Image 1 (tube, one colour):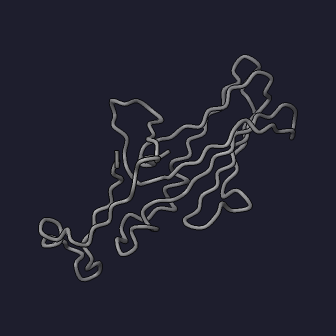
Image 2 (cartoon, one colour):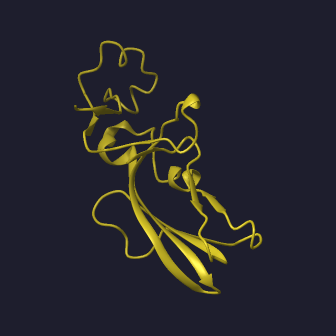
Length: 158
């Protein structure tokens, strides 16, 4: 799934019998998933009748993405993310609910689409084209610092 992390993305845990919840957030660029979570969040429920816990993970992922350095678009402008959701059944005892993998990019969601928008990645690929200089490169104020013209897009290949 592709996450647009310039918009909020909420992880919700609302399970029968929970007294709290935990979210483990793993963020990395290349290679395999880290052995320990990058961030771990925990919350107790508000009351027995208000047990829903909500976590906004976007801002934590955003700090791992650099959309200014086009010289290495394949590793700078996205990040791998794995989210593990847990319910707490008694103090300090957690049960894994699910594990979800994402590819995060620094983009916005369409306002009319509501919250937590994401797209599948099965038929998507990153486009980075050094030949796009006719329209973008001539007016590039950063031409001396970043002389390579670029465009960073996820395109549906179907």
